[in-house]
Length: 195
Image (cartoon, rainbow, N blue to C red):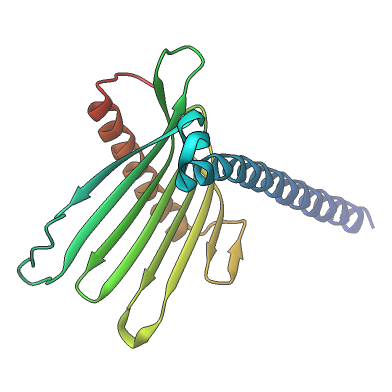
């Protein structure tokens, strides 16, 4: 009887811990979505143009690769557009805080779209990737949410996973590495150092 009670207590504790962790991850994702929406509202003001865009506290810089549209060997059409959205850091006299990077890529018959969304601490919070024109005409979409350097949710198509697999964690490491390289490129272009 004691063994059954002990086993029941362990199962109850494990289930409770799993439920608490799931709620925590859901809270983190909800906070990221709210922050993403707030930054998106600022970006929408800039995209509309006019006086409100000039007064907005978010700035856009673009980098275009192959603007002339030259064909690339073994690829054909190749174009990449990077959009860096950044805002003022209260401690700086000019905009320095990278919040979002949008990357549009056309490579041959395929189109790719990526977003890297950064928190005010400069760490990756959200990543989105869409790929169109894959063999068979299928489109692919992957979303991932981060707390610090930890992947808390991976969404691939309609499949939501709050307990990332080893493969998803490895993919997240690659994404975080790319986000850090993009941040370094932004800082270099702005003539900045550090966070």
